[in-house]
Length: 410
Image 1 (tube, rainbow, N blue to C red):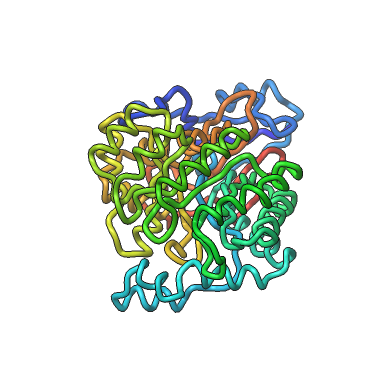
Image 2: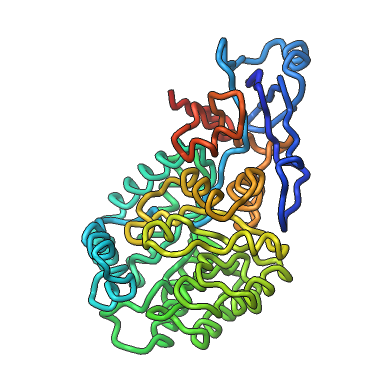
């Protein structure tokens, strides 16, 4: 048993709404609290002095003369951290004026990473994924969604998903795999978009199900990727097999959000070009809008209209989209803080977007500090939790707690 604290402030994020705006006044800020953890679960939170008297034999993990703030560990609900190679050349072309779609059409873009990922061994992909997951854990993240989608052949997509599965056995963070074989149709596939998606269904999906590699599937619905018609047919088949669906939509053109809502996607991700009709559709649905400010920063384009989405009553999560091309930064906290400043989000809204609302985008438990749930905490050396966002990613946690694991970063 471990007793963490005392915390100058503890923000549990319990009891807050899933959808719509949140004011900072709605946050319950507990002072001089402690957290007792037993067998990886939160046994109790409460007055630190009372917990000390009650759990006399617990191992104490305390700040000493320093001041600590405890927050729920962060959740990055959209990443691509399983990849090989680099896209430095793409970045140089983009900042020189070439668009993402122009670079992809000329043979760069996703296909550059596909070639490198195909050439990598499964062990190399495991190691790369582990290293990136550990870096995210150092930033206070306990749950990381990880997509395939850089293999785009039967063998290479399965290689990626197996690498994610094995990496999950190594790192303390919880990795949530998502099958993104429908990222783009690879240039070396001789056939139509529909034929490529049929190949995924016939050759990859049965093995995914047999080996229990994931129950989540994603499709990139966009110009240069897949259209609505072929995506619909593929998604409906995947849903019948029991897969949860998430979609890349409205990154460069509007209209995909309505499609995502119609098909009951658990989340619709990107949304940089979402317009009023899409905002209304999301606000009247259970689909979580996932903003990816790292892609906006990486591509030099507008942010997801998060303020409008929240004011309309949508559920909004924020994720890093860490990938080698459009979002190479990978720092969720910095991105969320910058997005908050740009979109005029309350600190409560930003924090909700990377905790319990992000957990809901994955349909997983997490994002709160609650008795009976697995301990997932991030601890900062400060006396005011608002400084975490005020410093825009420069204040990093000194500790991340995931179950029985206490990972110190000092």
